[in-house]
Image 1 (tube, rainbow, N blue to C red):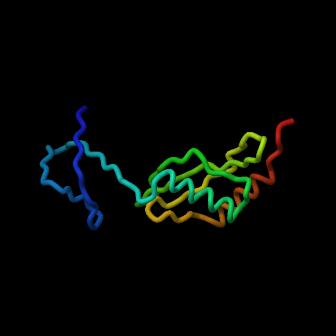
Image 2 (spheres, rainbow, N blue to C red; image 1 turned 60 degrees about the vertical axis):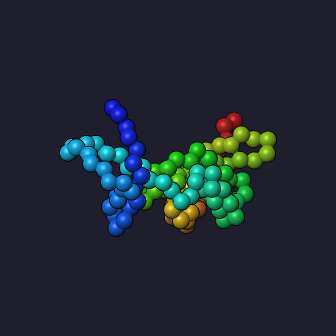
Image 3 (tube, rainbow, N blue to C red; image 1 turned 180 degrees about the horizontal axis):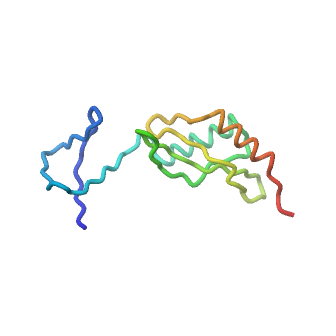
Length: 124
């Protein structure tokens, strides 16, 4: 399979290529969306929110970009951590809108993380 890249812009929900291209009927096309918020920036947003709004012993890691409805979302696993101890978890996930950097489902995420942290019993 040969892959050729063309640049395009989304306008009113449709891809408009910057150059005129002709493709054969039935050609398979992939669209890759760029995000406004990079993975490192999203991780910083996630960790700042966790520390300031949930608990200072939590950290976000293992971020992946996923499709959500019409947009893209950075999803991070949330772990508990402390000095001298390996992180444990994940306790849950934290989702960030990849276009705006907004934390999604804030209150439900807090509730889930609190419940799972309280239920955790370290191995003996």
